[in-house]
Image (cartoon, rainbow, N blue to C red; front, side, top):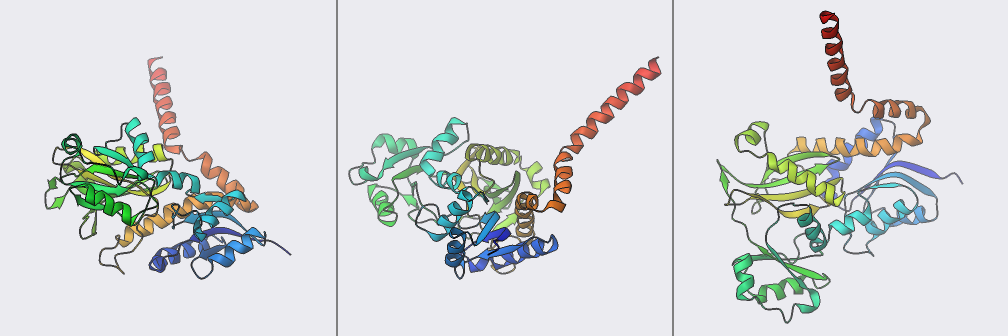
Length: 345
């Protein structure tokens, strides 16, 4: 039996990501790449056929990122694709590490990424842990409690004041091996906006959005606003997080505190929101979703094209010209030097 190979697979259980999936399928069709959507209807059968080598995957975009549960079918799919030599964006091992807030927090601090003041409590110590005067002085009151290992905001308590809130977080996320007691930041206003941002890092590009953590509404950050409000540190912080985590696809939340400093408050969300505003009132602006689709498609296409002989020359040419701007500048500089030397002679 001939083994069916898919150039690109999108792994997602979310029906509300249909807009994203449709755009990805459309691009694959335009570039003559085979595509498959592994959703709740097909994922079990798809994984089974992958294990029996009836099918193969060159590149997979994982929009599930449920690495907190190793038995989850989407997690197993990501590891199976990787084990068979396919490329998963993002690598499930990197995703699992980045999902652990406590481990990533320590690395971010080591690499001088600004984060709120934080205390860690091990799972087994929750029952006996006490919020001392020293801790209160360090993180302030109220403070934030969140599981180190979890997603979708489960167990996150924003206005915690005592050990009771820590225990409540533990009750909601009992499988987390640690919990964070974290300084609650006070957002600084910027014009008619509040200085709270959700930023996307997609394959080396940073896309900043204003974000309201209460209403979950997005607005695009314009170049003029970046200049007016001196928001350049946002991109620097995101690129540092990307270097530390080695993730290609994630979102983060960064807050401009009342002290005038930027702090990363939600480090790596490996399953960034892809709900389009045209379908959801608090969704991401459609133009951002479309741009993210293109960035991820282009990244995966670099992998998928290598399996198509007639694409290889084109791909090599694309890679060879990736830094053409810098080379062009050097050529122009050399030309000017040469010209000046000739005139002098």
